Length: 113
Ligand SMILES: [Zn+2]
Image 1 (cartoon, rainbow, N blue to C red):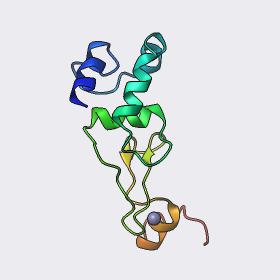
Image 2 (tube, rainbow, N blue to C red):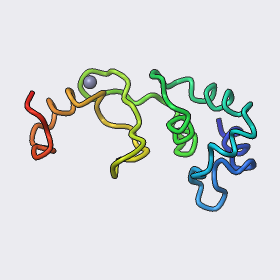
Image 3 (cartoon, rainbow, N blue to C red):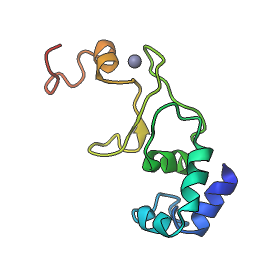
Image 4 (cartoon, rainbow, N blue to C red):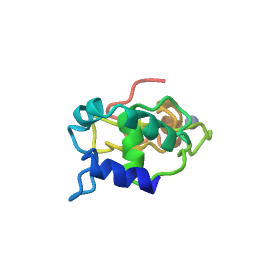
């Protein structure tokens, strides 16, 4: 996977200075579609149908194992937009387990069970 990361830096999908994902990665990969397969292969440890952005973030962050739910051990998904938890795997497989384990978090926004 390290080799692939270096190649992704070479083609500017990962920014060399910051080590972060290039916001224009889609544009780069459109020109180099063969890399999509490499990225999927390098992240085949993911047990869910992860979007390419999540797979790239795994490579960026050197994540090499599928994180699993703290409660039920199902695969967790990476949060990709809309919160400060961007580009991190959630600790739980979904709201149900998260809600069971931390009932006083997000009380203001949670829905009745
Ligand atoms: Zn769970």
